[in-house]
Image 1 (cartoon, helix red, strand yellow):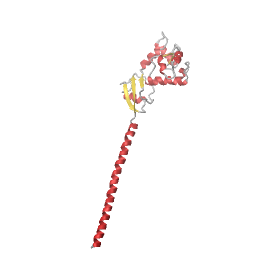
Image 2 (cartoon, one colour):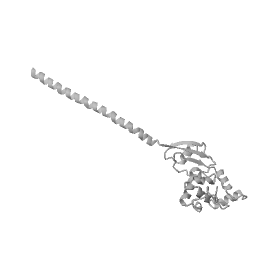
Image 3 (spheres, one colour):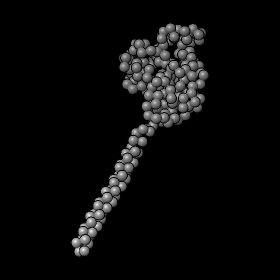
Length: 209
């Protein structure tokens, strides 16, 4: 009998040790799962912020609903215009680069065809018939009948003929009017990077809008 009881006691101790080991292993696994989940939760906000980066721009001019628009980073001007209800029938969409990627704080001005036509006429010599003035300006590729260069319609080659304006500066002038809209006064040339008072003084008698 004593040997039987001793054997039973040993078996009970071994069974308790096995059961305890099983419970310990299950408990350790349960503790490991929340740590992984917490790691995923910590990484998730950073990834979410990267995916939802946004820029805010101001769209004005010939669009259905001018105003501020917030769009995902990397969006192009065309999408911002659509967010404002699209272009008006009178919009001169060819005067802006709809494929350009937006920058935060940028202003996009969509001019109207009538506005551009009026500016072309105002730059022509006084006394000339409006139709003839426009035809001459178009034929000269941006040069008005008065011999002045129209900074709203001149191409890179024609702008390059102006004093102090090389190919790089000509590109900046074209980029400015594509992103900010047509010039409303020749003094706005000073807003183009690289054109200061001294350079503008050489240009002001040779350009028009």
